[in-house]
Length: 369
Length: 240
Image (cartoon, rainbow over all chains, first blue to last red; front, side, top):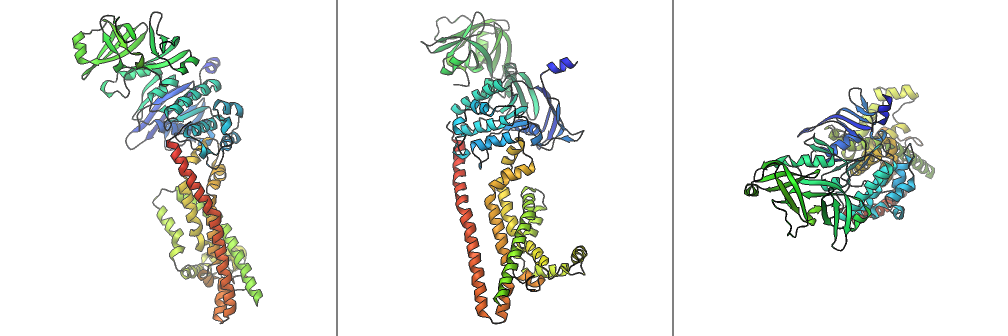
């Protein structure tokens, strides 16, 4: 019994209700404290409120929150830990740095109040690349730099769980990519579990292992990120995402002469996408293909300019107004394809029919692009 | 005779200093409470705090005189606790001054706390800082200018006080005889030379004090404003 408890991944157990004017936020869910868990949903779906509830900033709630066995809130037992006693960190959308302190002063603010002090200050500064900025005033920093200071400051408080509330939304694409990579690296190096709220699925698809989808305050889906994205494809006309195939594949070869990178889909089939310098440091790549970017042919398109063509079998056909969503099984991977109802009739597609999928290398997207 | 004016100056400074200290001690939590308060009773408390700004000082003095008399509860309790009469004492003019100068301390602090908002305090709490810690490590450094303004205005306004003290002080040398009362006495006695002397001293003193506040605060406020708006601009347009 003790052994199984010890081996079990620590969890964040949520069982909370928060009343709102438009809807109630009601979440009953154990979230394993492992890697980065994404929280996705449209605005007013309750994402930020959830983070505020976990961190202790959202006070009027009912239920209980347990973090790695420690009760943070239990309204029945009248337990309500203050934010400063929860060991939960939060990086806000706007960095919320203390303007009267330097970068170093902001970081020391967290260190001075940290009870454990297990982390090396220098290591965190190095991971967030802040060494040259330590003596700067925070108002001299760019948005991306400010968020790096906010991230480092939150980490130095040594939380058991780090919450990130749209940390990239105010940044440009270049800063976003940089910070996202930094977060992934920090998560791995420090083994710090994170809960990452965003309305950008592309961001989450890059870094999260698990995805929680909220809609109007309720859990719509929770689980492996690729599976959840594929489940979201099937919400038909109410889809809250662009229907897509989400992939995490090993990089096989770089064809630098043609500017293409090959990803191994399975033993027989590869997917090609446009190369990027950033790929060279990686051996695994996360990417996605929008369902509207894939087309279907009944014969192998041997003389086409389109580089990717995969052989597969139609598994499912869903009619959606003027479109049809096809789920096509290629090797061990499902692909999602939307075609017009007109084309579906013309090709008279049926379940278990063998087809070829076609898509351009440029249709295979990564967040880096 | 000049000695009596010097005595009045010392009494005035003692009263104003003590009043300012008390005002900061009670005015800070009151201003904080008002800044964070969302109840509809807020306007009533705000009106009570602001009342000395519009009320004739003699009205306040009149009610305080009645309250401080040994026949009424506040005066009676004071007498039981200290063995001395409250009306016509140094303590009475300090209490009167505290009430009279309250808005001059509470209002700038309330405004500063409102402007500061909750965002940085939430950030502090999540880094492990408790409420007292947050006050000294975040609120105080960021609202320092408003504390200087509040303390200086409270002090200067107390020095310039006349009506309330006239009603509850009783013009006792070394106890309740302050500069403004001494000046009034000189005018009453047609001693215009000494009235001039006191007037010019009060005028210059007030002038120097106010100039000192503006000198201390204004450049910093301007600087902070300029830089914070610069930071805001940067926020939307980051380049890393």
